[in-house]
Image (cartoon, rainbow, N blue to C red; front, side, top):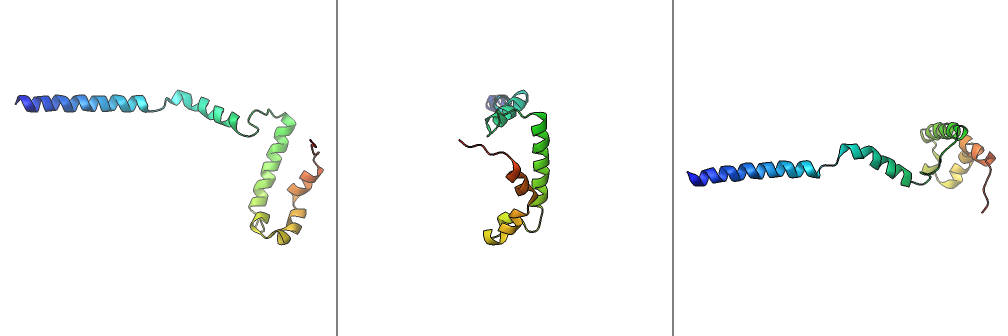
Length: 104
């Protein structure tokens, strides 16, 4: 009888320890947003703060890019010699040609 009682205690203690250990090893949800922001800031351009005009241009470029990606004749999926004319007539390409270029 005493042996089975000790086994029961051992099982209960083991279960409690497992529950405590798993609770301690799970990430703190309060730190999740801080970790996400840290990762975003480490990305290319993550430290750049855009002006309102730059944010509007970024939104416009993103919309244009989404439209171009959904086209059937998506240039990256084609051989360059076939895609060249599609690229030249692309609204995004025309906009990029007008943008100032930085020379280092």
